[in-house]
Image (cartoon, rainbow over all chains, first blue to last red; front, side, top):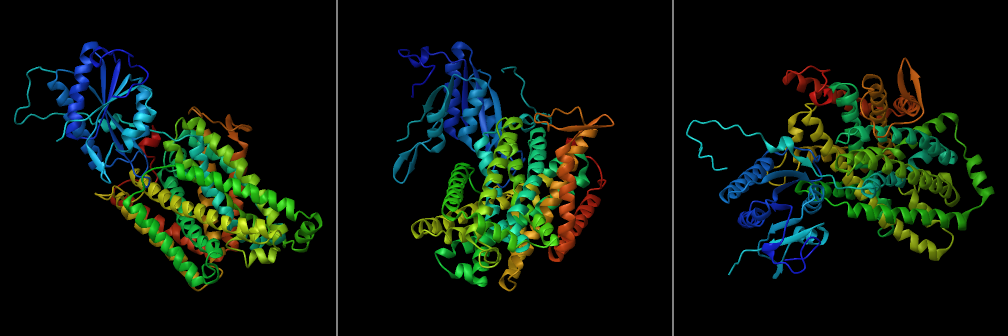
Length: 156
Length: 483
């Protein structure tokens, strides 16, 4: 967990208050776990949860290009996340973004919506034999205007 | 959430698609738009100086200066248009809003010609700049043209796979290029300034009136990259403010650099040499003729690398620009949908990338045999760009007449009132001057006008057949423009 503006100095995770929570998703299993955790954190203060999926558009296409398979894939992911939240008896707002880069678009979204927390599921990845968080997670940790929680499932 | 209702076999569920209420995340600022625009306009000085000097000889700075006024008018028109409609398409987009689908297609098709030639001419001038490192790149037309084609094929492959979006490289190369050129101008003035030599080179090589007018017409190619900055509007944060700011900044930087470089070039190299030996790499010609060996030895490789890099970026920008434009025109039913086809794995418009690279390569084929192909490509570039600029000016004027109530975050000042309509003087002058220059190019440049008109004719056939197949009227106003 990384401490940022909005995080209490001496509060435990369960005691912290987040007005709005942003959960970026890419469709992996860990995203479902992140949604469950976000619902549990949000229930106490009836916080609003934004589940965000980003479609990245290559430079050779206009930003508003509608790439049908990509849109369908993102829609399916968001539908699945809505169902996960429903299982937790909580309602989330889903957001579909179209952007050139994932990191800056998520930071802009967080800023614009005034969220108090970004909660991300992180997959265990190795690059060149070393554990790697990936460029998007690092960008968010570096530029987030609010608190960030990274959730990683235990893998043996 | 737990209503107890479940989907039963035969039930039809309507769920509105999120994509209808999605957001486009715009993250670029003034610096990114400026660098993209400067990358294109600034790169053109790397070859425009040579082309203009072929016609205007001693009056090259004057020709570039007069064309610069035309550039100011056009940049201002684009500032108003891009702030109103921050979307892909540039002049084609303005024409769609200002007129109808047909004019939008014509404008977009002319713009496509301009992009194709940008790809060709930028790639064609990379090898001579790298000639410092290996002389045959500059001296052998076969090696030079083959390397240019190789560069285009490499960029085609890169764009087929898809380049991840980053503007940092563009920003840094634009900054380094700008600083180097300012330094070159300053060093040139300090070491070479000789008023009597300058005066003699201008007076002794003063062109005929006909050549001066042709020089001014050809000089317009130096400024034809404005469209790139306008295309960036769709991904710019607060485009209504940031795009006009970037365009004004670009205008100042480009005019200052062009004025300085064109004067220093006359001090460093004689107009005959500029038009022959250094025609394709005039900036390298300045660096090579700096009298102090120590400074010249620093500038020669530096100019070679920098000009090569910025021309490579301009080639790539042309390829990206044309594929985006083709996709955008396809979305508005102005082009066959095959050009908007996206590769299932790479998510790039592979068909348009391949087809337009092949056309750009075809334009360069004469480079293997004909030494004067360079000037012809330059005139073809001007033919396409000026046509697109004409439509832009006309669309902005038409919008002032037909839709005066539309919000204009950047409204051009200096308007004249005719029958209750506020018409921007700069757009009217821009329309008249671009039209005049386009007519001159069409009359005096048989190769470019022939290829240009064939391009327009082929486009018209494609458009008419496509619209007929889709059972759509030729002159209709698209729904999005009619909103």
